[in-house]
Amino acid sequence: MAVVVYLESQKGTIKKTGFELASYGRAVADALGEQLIGVGFNLQDTKSINPYGMDVLYNVDTPEGSFFNADRYSSTIAGIASKEKAQVIVVSSSADGRYLGPLLSAKLDAAFLSNVVDLPTQYSPLKVKRSCFTNKAFNRTLSQKECNILSLSSNAFGLNEQQGDVEVRSEPYAEATTDLEVTAIDQATDKVSIADADIVVSGGRGLKGPENWHLIEDLASVLDAATACSKPVSDMGWRPHSEHVGQTGKPVASNLYIAIGVSGAIQHLAGINSSKVKVVINNDPEAPFFKAADYGIVGDAFEVVPKLIEKLKARKH
Amino acid sequence: MNILVCISPVPDTTSKINFKEENTAFETLGIQYVINPNDEFGLTRAVHLQQKVGAKVTVVTVGDTSCEPILRKCLAIGADQAIRVDLQPQDGFQVATQLEALCKKTNYDLIITGRESIDYNGGMVGGLLAVHMGIPYVPNCVHLDLSGNDVALEREIDGGKERLKSSLPLIVGAQKGLVEEKDLIIPNMRGIMQARQKPLEVVSPIEVTAATLVEHYEKPPEKGAVKLVDAEDIDGLIDLLTNEAKVL
Ligand SMILES: Cc1cc2nc3c(=O)[nH]c(=O)nc-3n(C[C@H](O)[C@H](O)[C@H](O)COP(=O)(O)OP(=O)(O)OC[C@H]3O[C@@H](n4cnc5c(N)ncnc54)[C@H](O)[C@@H]3O)c2cc1C
Image 1 (cartoon, rainbow over the protein chains, first blue to last red):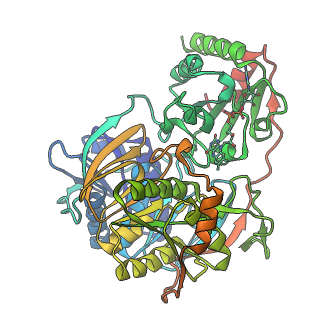
Image 2: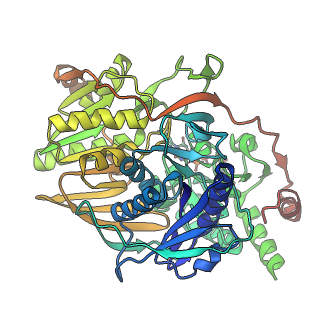
Image 3: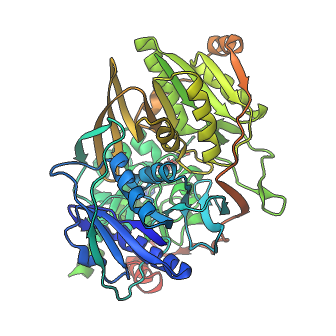
């Protein structure tokens, strides 16, 4: 019996979400008295997982130059999960994690539980807390299946270091079951993505136009943050769609979310609510965002933000 | 060419979410239902393909009679016919299994679901259905072009886009970008009149139990009041974020 976690990586390096999944998986494995098993693809630094108490790591090689393939990845992970008799499989809530989860659940006849925000409170049958209504509420879901795929919300559990000395194994890459193929990847920038970022800086219509976005970019750059925007900002083409956050855009679950010139409409707040700390800068003291934020400045973004950037830069040195 | 668009009726995005029966059920009183926004982008793309390549567009929802106004709206937007599977589903697994039964009776070349529904945010119906049918699935789909049997697609990924190719049949998970906000079709009077004449078939569900059951709901804890910092006191804000919130 085992708990299996899928470790996402970029250029062979395990992503931070992978360490969070390993920390979570360790806690689940301890509760069940089972082994924690990781699965990664083309990993070059398998040792980086050692501080997270993983027992076994399957490192799967895929052909040179090949791209992520959800069908083959999920078949490979499902094969390992069957072999190891996994009871719980954990994936992240990234675009790839949420892609793999349902495929895995169908391939393993397991239940799929999205947006998991805590450890299960019981295991047979499994019961766990999840967010729903795009973070407007939570529920406790009871699984009816023996095997369960959990998609963990990012930053919901955090990192938990402990000693480990992982045993690395290899595993063949499963064959494709469909003809779908990735032909190219256009990475928008080499900036940190909204899903991976600890800090997200977001701009709304209050910034008046795309020409003022250097304020958002510069603030994000001193904070190593990802940039985001409200829906109308992306609809008007001031910013790419990929930056649209909220109920109909990307979800945000960062440690710090800074909203500048964003009014805080219910649809916007729904998507960003699970961020730990929210800061708002808005010149209208009546803006609804002030009701959702932890810290706020009532002021003109064009005056406040440059000062903030300057102070943060000075602090860095 | 046959296109199936799977529609989830969801609470209007401005809805305040409340629960009843000691927090074991969603309070539907006063809730206005709308087409799940992700599904609406998918439906719009389907209607474009209907006009471009002469596809026949069927919309389907798994739900009780209260879903019919939503299906009529889809017909007014331009779908040719509607199907309602007569079951109030408990989870995405049940929905996917009902859709599978339907897709085994009629061949659909292209099946469109939303990337996720904005109520339970499961994002699983398309993926489950795809594996059950043995056909490919592309979620977060922001581009779809057909040329004969070949399909060129784009999937939004964290920090970028992925380009893919496949052949029909295929399932995509739609979202904004597949069509733009401005392309969404607002039904006109003629559309609404025509929708009344279009077929809406009710089919009986197959027997299948849910994979998950929601036992209990809760709302997020009440938030404390915002701490306001003077616009001149930037150092004060940085200090709070560093030493109190510990996020810098
Ligand atoms: C079906 C549906 C789905 C939706 N989904 C989403 C979603 O996913 N995400 C989303 O964001 N929205 C969504 N919306 C839109 C949402 O309702 C709001 O319209 C939108 O969030 C408002 O964007 P905004 O805050 O940028 O603009 P506005 O509401 O126009 O707010 C701009 C703010 O900037 C402030 N401001 C102006 N000048 C300055 C200045 N100089 N300095 C500081 N502050 C200034 C103003 O006080 C104001 O509060 C959705 C709407 C619908 C109907």
